Length: 414
Image (cartoon, rainbow, N blue to C red; front, top):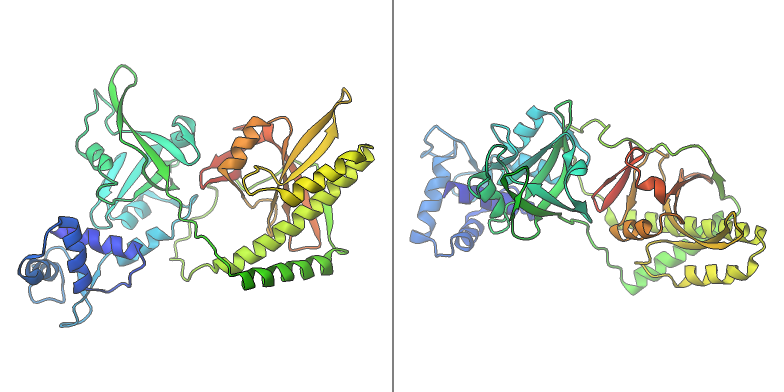
């Protein structure tokens, strides 16, 4: 009963319920979990809440797990509300100390797999960044090896908890531990298939397929809103075209190193205005892509292969969202052959240290065209003179230069 109540509060908080939840909602959720009608109009549920609430006359002076807004209101709150909200604001790359991790998730000891009843969650720990080095990862998916370092592993204890996580609606928070005993948040994962047996170092182990949970909000505009935004783009582009310049820089790119940022200890307040951000980012991206296209057309004309310009324009005007690149261009190799050049434009208002978002589709295309795929990393876009640095696909997959972090993926410097 106590664990089910903690599960209900944590689940509802993750679904954006207010901090105080009415008994009627708690009763409904309990019936769903137990698959049976609450006995005696929920008397046992109320009793369990009161036993673990200081404001109640029935408090047993042991664990305080729940808070009553005021007697007779029927409104209850988990004592771990702030923890669960804080967990929902974790960002990939955030760093926690051991104490911060234990306090946030309300867990008492450290192991590879840990379940927290109080925040109703699973914490997985990977040591020495083996999340990237040793695990199989692609498109936000990994294969996690079960708990148990000696002898054959068994599907019991924490391994069984992980195996049942989807059925029990338990979110999985994955952290990698570095050599300085700092814990790096890798994202919220869920089971992506049944666990299976494998033989590793002459012993039986259990493998758990996991997939990064996608929490990106989809933006939908009405026809009127879309036309208004398009008009805004056109005015912005025309107004600033004479002032805009691209400055190509040959220096090696210096993107911020992964996990080398301070952990924000303050609870992040407020919500991001996704619509406004989408408008700004789309305007910035479209304008920058057109300027890069103009630059490439000039380069192609200098090579005296003007007949290919129309093909470049045609591709740009008709490209699909899943092409894997933004601009088709051309260059001449040392043997005089005309080679297609695939350019993905990544623009940010920040400086060159800002990490770059890249989709799994773009990653796959880059892998297939390592020799002629380029990322044009455009930064300082808030200025009229924008800096451009070029990343070759062959460098993108070089572990000594960049790290791909599955958000989908985010590019960091090494």
